[in-house]
Image 1 (tube, rainbow, N blue to C red):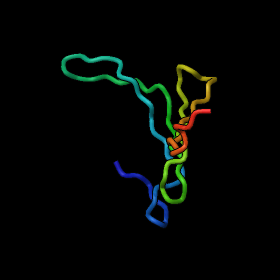
Image 2 (image 1 turned 120 degrees about the vertical axis):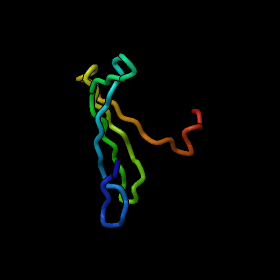
Image 3 (image 1 turned 45 degrees about the vertical axis):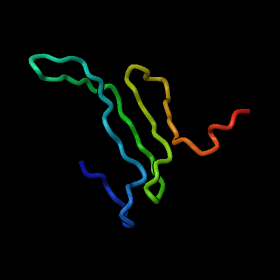
Length: 76
């Protein structure tokens, strides 16, 4: 798989991928069902800034993941 690059050679600001779940196996073959889409957002340097997930099992729910920061271990 190749990823699209910007003029600096970094990943483009947003990419999308299919979200799939393994639905079964038969005769040594694996079957997958598409259950949503994943959007990976990056800055100009190609660093991932967030991941948005649209899942068909939760159509009205927005799911977002952010990379861990150094100060995430600090508890209030």
